Length: 298
Image (cartoon, rainbow, N blue to C red; front, side, top):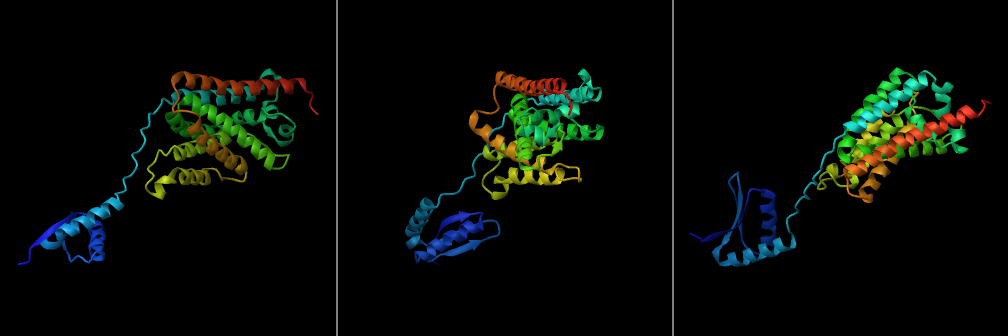
């Protein structure tokens, strides 16, 4: 009986087949034994040393591909940011509804292409807190809270909402510059989709998902775009441009956050960022109401 030696064994049949090709290329006689559970390569004893050496050289030239370990995510408390968002939107809705300070809040704070181009930058922020009716308000509250929980858990409540305000304001500004000067709009939906963009851009750029397959590598981008298409292109009243540009600006902001510093930021930074976010909204409204009160209607 011929003396045979096992030179390789694996449960992966493909790995066994690859090494069989190595032996065949080296003109080393072999047999592949497969019992249904594992696969083995056996060779005559006199050439076993040469076979082992060929397989070693193959292993050295083709080290196994090991998936990158997933990055550890330290989740934050998202509730303060969500509460802040809800309070700001509801308070502005109430004050606008009762015309506090004798001002027409809708006229003072909405996106107006002509006025924004002439320098009324605050409208890119104030418009985010205005809504046409209760249904409009509730819709943006629900989606804002939903995405806000994810953003706050990932980035921290302060950084997340400051990023949202900045990205959404940029989205409104870009939308104004690209559309007709008479374009007018209101609503927090631009902020909602900016938030979605921030999540997509940050998760993708920070490589928080596995990178070994394209479906997981680009999953955040694909998922974000899918949600944008599904929830951001509704009725004829939907401001698709604001939704799209809010998402784009948010995506860029999310990528920038992976560069500026370690996330999530420490509690002090979170508190300062949250204060900055509320301050931006408050200052924008103070300026808007002051201008509207002191400027006679045309």
